[in-house]
Amino acid sequence: MNVSADHLNKITDDIIGAAIEVHRALGPGLLESAYEACTAFELAERKRKVARQVPLPLTYKVVQLDCGYRLDLLVDDLVIVELKTVDALNAVHKAQILSYLKLTGLHVGLLINFNVKILKHGLVRVVNEFPETKTI
Image 1 (cartoon, one colour):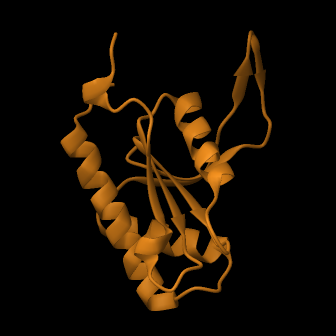
Image 2: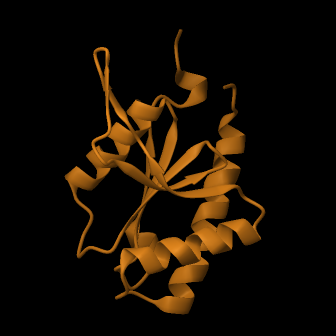
């Protein structure tokens, strides 16, 4: 799929705006599932295609395994959103979304921790071979 960096940036801007709207309304302290449902609603309001709990099979050599991996949100079939409600994001959370990007072949993901006072402190953008830098 051929997609521009500008297009991906517009999608991530909408996702961040939706997450900020949800965080302003609900604040920290709820379950991840509540933030997921509300963020999906906000994205749909912004006319974005959003899928929740998308299964992510793992292929090892010639065997396809269903290991129970699921993408919290997949927006416009292009951006993975991994939601958290933890005290602090750490390296394992970033590694998780980077692995999801590699397994799907997608380029951009957002890691969003709702358990913060100000949402921008809980936002991480993760990139896997941005389209302009990918070499063939």
